Image (cartoon, rainbow, N blue to C red; front, side, top):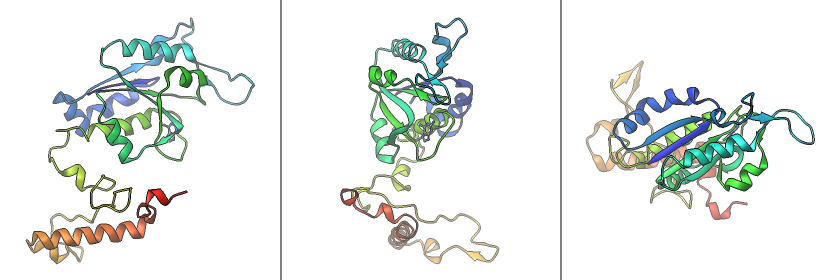
Length: 240
Ligand code: 6GU
């Protein structure tokens, strides 16, 4: 898989892509991640990438030319057709299902904006998939791009050491999950020591009885989901 990230702040993204699971996936050749500075593609003598909005109002708007030329140039670096993703608060909410869909792509181009937003013609000309990571405002799309890359790459075969681990987690798509969401929150975990400040590990986890352990974990996952995220138990088709 190849991922190109277009941003005004590649230096903010690069260290994140070098660490942990992502860093190992890159070293293992499972994914190629390249960051590109949109400012490198401006034709403006002052290297401008943003301008004031027509009609007035606060903030600045990302201009068409630098973004569109950057996308064209970066797409041309590799003949594999790319799925274009624009990070913006108006986009579709990132969920595990969306991440799983993106993880099926051979190539992604993520476009992270800054300032008030993108000139609307960028949307019209690129017809990108638009993704938001939640209902809050970030100063720019960089953090969102990092979130998307992390959520996607860890789903690629071989990215996690233990083959089954993505399936066991919260928000993973599971056949035994509730409704269309197919998700439970994760059950509680314990590691050594058996007792810490008077708090003991539940006996069932020390029993060596794998069937009992599985049943306990499933019951705990359901209990947590009902308590903390009842919205996940609702069938998606019944939502307004
Ligand atoms: Cl993708 N961008 C910005 N600027 N803010 C956000 C977001 C993206 N997702 C949630 N908030």
